[in-house]
Image 1: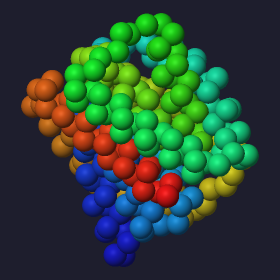
Image 2: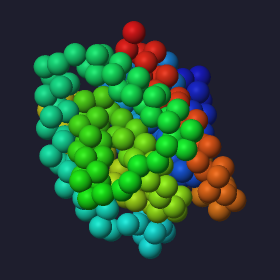
Image 3: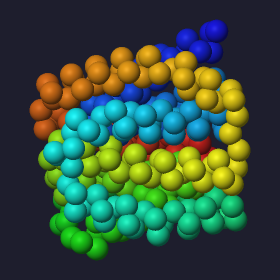
Image 4: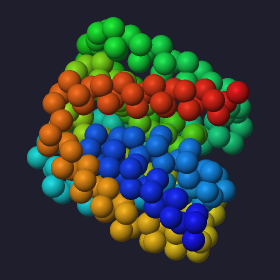
Length: 238
């Protein structure tokens, strides 16, 4: 019972962050859920709840989705995902996490110093491809999208909506691959269902917060999440 209560508190705050910004659930939930559950269980709970948040939120934010960008992200993520599986199966994932953590921290500093990226079709595809690769290799699709979207100064509503819609696709693919090539269990689904109420509370609280955030505050939150992601990957890889 204590484990479920702790997991519920984690999911409450993580879903609030996800609903408010469109990202952040994985980086906040996964490290703490790993303190409660074994890795396979924690990761699949994270994926299941992320899918549900996107399912319930996307219809209400559909008008803000950049459809052209979303199509590019989906197309390129399908290409990148198999390479992530190969990395997961045959290469040193910890080395990959170390390299990515350093890259994220360096780019976050550049963004804070007002470094900006010029958006292009090729960069749209690259960000989606790298996101697909990271989803199937380390279970974290957010960092490349967040870095790119922040660097090109995309409006917060478009960033949040397009990211949530993309997560619905990429996490569904990831869960399908895990079930097909890996395994799942009754415990995972029971725990996930028991966490639904707190997920919904956090989701609605996050939607309320989003309406009261300025673009500047939103950017500060993205910097904090990027830094947390970088340090988390760095810590878990050494």
